[in-house]
Image 1 (tube, rainbow, N blue to C red):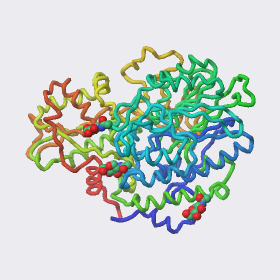
Image 2 (cartoon, rainbow, N blue to C red):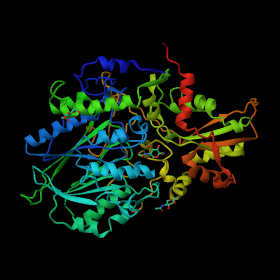
Image 3 (cartoon, rainbow, N blue to C red):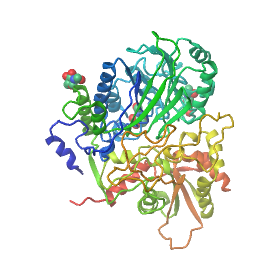
Image 4 (tube, rainbow, N blue to C red):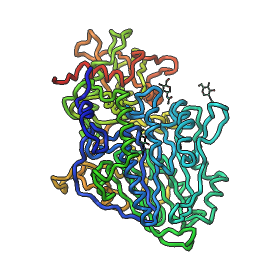
Length: 613
Ligand SMILES: *[C@@H]1O[C@H](CO)[C@@H](O)[C@H](O)[C@H]1NC(C)=O
Ligand SMILES: *[C@@H]1O[C@H](CO)[C@@H](O)[C@H](O)[C@H]1NC(C)=O
Ligand SMILES: *[C@@H]1O[C@H](CO)[C@@H](O)[C@H](O)[C@H]1NC(C)=O
């Protein structure tokens, strides 16, 4: 065991710059300016514990402390003009990074770091609700940390002290902005999620908006803006339903939506007075939004507002540019304190501990699957065959199935640290198996998992929706299956998606590869002008054949059908389609007790990826 050289350097480095000491410096790139207005917003979503920023990627290398400094300067800049600035976060703050996942209990460091930012409005994601103790930590820590600003329009929780079912947080609030006097009614939604633990209740959005309190809230005549923050894709039946419900009552009050969940940058026009912004994932993006021409308490006559958006790359180069400051003037004392709190937390959690060295980059969706550079091909060909073995089934061949969504991030060439382990594989799921399945039937199960759209329909009604099989980014792409929503208004295209699309030809060589977003307002949304990155589709699941000890090259008659436990609802349905008659409740058992995908990966890396000294 040894530590990366970067942590040693951190003791030598002076504290002139913020960011984490081991983070790469940002690379200068051409930038587009922000367009300010009466009311301005900064928005994060799906941060998944990445409060230290991306240490290996210069474009996203600023940390939460830098974001604290940035928000402070942006607020001052707005206030100097008599304008307002609101900071929003729309959930999935937990799970997906060692800073959250590797502490015991989970999240004790991130909760402390997160609360250092002044956030005006926040909501819960689905990840806050998968496990009972995660939602209880939300209820007992995060909601009080942001008292009055955390909203839960459609989530209830059984209070761990009283066992009473109570709202996770207030349903909505009305407030008036400090400088402009803009009267805002704000909500905090979660999409129609069904995979939560049974200590919380998520009411479908379509039902919530028929409730009396919502109907009363949208009938308030003294409102200049409806603000809908939520962990909801901006192109979704849920947001469309909210939009229509408000418009039925208030035909011209401006509405601003903030959304997330799909991990993409996107901007949707619902009508000329209603827009929605999605601000990516993992602290790569800080969304900026401004609205100008709103009515106010002092000046209530209707106006025609204009809306503007930008996606800011989370790095110091962008932050300096948009604030007009530099390395000396940008960091605030509070921001620097937060950066140092992050550094201390990372050190306490040994996140820089090196487990091995990756010989090259391995990509989730930037490389074709299958290929040499695909992380999934690497798992199929190298990791799984070398590590999936249950001692009690040692003489049996196995077919191992993993959903592609179980892997959460790329692997970069070089040191593979404790942090990287949690970044790539944050989930705590283990393996289960059904013994002695005819090989051809086992292969059919994988085929069904990858091909049959019916699997998703059935699985989502039986709770499998708790685990999307693929990485979330892919959910945003037009699917082979038509999006079924006969009620959808023609006003927005539910299938249009905006992540990095493979493009070629027009990129200038000096540009840094990154987001090149196309949304309802055009192609100028990204603050940084990037060259495009390819995005390749991946299957729902990958498979690896693990031969038994006596296996020659001939195919076995039967195999153990091994799968990641949290896709069991999908596997159950696929098995039925494939003609495999088993009762998973009775016939499936734990495979490799005590092991998880994460521990399996760790063992493989330690054994196979030596670092050159
Ligand atoms: C929830 O319980 C698990 C298992 O005991 C533990 O590892 C985890 O840290 C707990 N999470 C929280 C937020 O307390
Ligand atoms: C949740 O499920 C557990 C076990 O599955 C059960 O003991 C408990 O009573 C349930 N809680 C609620 C609030 O339904
Ligand atoms: C920074 O941290 C120090 C030590 O914890 C504390 O005394 C100081 O008040 C903090 N300053 C700010 C601006 O947060």
